[in-house]
Image (spheres, rainbow, N blue to C red):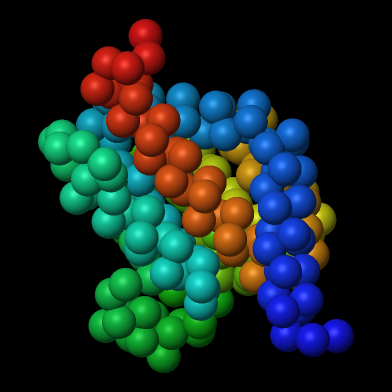
Length: 197
C-alpha cells in the first residue's frame, strides 16, 4: 500500500465513523444538551475530566463554556478536573492516581451540577470513580466513550446520558468526541441565546 492510499483510508474511515455516529447519537446528544442547559440555567456548574487526549478534550470543552464558543455571551461555570497539577499530584501522591478526579468531584460537586466524563475505552479507573462520586452527589453524568462503552456503560443511571462512538480505534473515537463537544456547545448557545424555543 502506498502512502496516498493509506491517507485516503483514514479519511474514508473517519467519514464512515461520523455517519455511523450520526445515525445513533442524535437523540442522546439532544438529551445531553437539555441536561447542560438546565444546569447552566439554574446556576449549576459543569465538571469535566479525562486522561491524555480526553484530558485535552475536557479542557477544550470547559474553555468554550467559560470563554465562548462562536458568539459573545456571559461565561458559564465549568471546571476541567485534569488541569490543576498541584491537586492532581498531591492527591495522586497521597491517595493514588485512581482518585484524582473523585476527590475533586467530592470537593466541588453539588446536586444539579453535571459531570462530563471522557474515556475512549470506558474503563479508565479514575473516570469511573469520578462518576461514582457524581452519583453520590446527585449529579447527572454525560459519558463520552467508544468501543462497547466498557465498565462505564454498565454504571450509568436513567438520569445520565451515554455518548458511545461506534468504533474500536482510539483515534476515531477521539475525533468524534471533538465533534460531539462542539455540537454540545452549539446546542447550549442555541437554547440560551434564543435560537431554539
